[in-house]
Length: 239
Image (cartoon, rainbow, N blue to C red; front, side):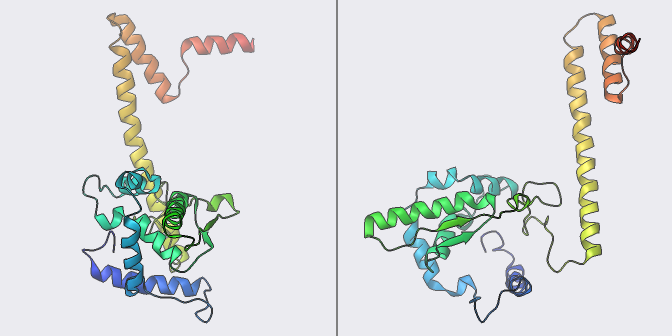
């Protein structure tokens, strides 16, 4: 809901897909209670209580929130529900007295914010809430899964993740397509960088001879062709 409020059909479909993913991962409904967050009004109520324990500046300093805002290009058009997501997440965790929260590396600031809320609440109202610990993956590669498009984080909402329901062929095509896009963007950026460096060096000299030498030297460098001086040095060293 925090970033799909204008697409209720997508939200409804996501509920079904997440439930299917849970079951596919092996969660046993006989042991684990699977429910829809928005159907538990107490979670919303608890979030509102916690909002009085957190300042706007503290939310703005949350590294995960800042990264998510940049990735979604929200800038100044940040939905309030999205901005206060760390508070909502704290309610999700503390309402059920969770002692350990399995997360990826990027979620550490979120859990730290939950711990701050718990500490402040308990300081004001007495020992009531459980301060949760973090459980990180032992596998270093799983600490932060990069997106198939080369971005820092794999995310369903960014469309750069591998779904559990994806076929092997679909996953292969998705990765190949994204890598081609990434290489194209890299080449375009590389051309711009070349132009900036070339212009900067040429503008530093008034001599036409020097400018010509710089241009030729840069051309050799970008094309991977050694200059005559380097060729002479290599020849002398080999001799």
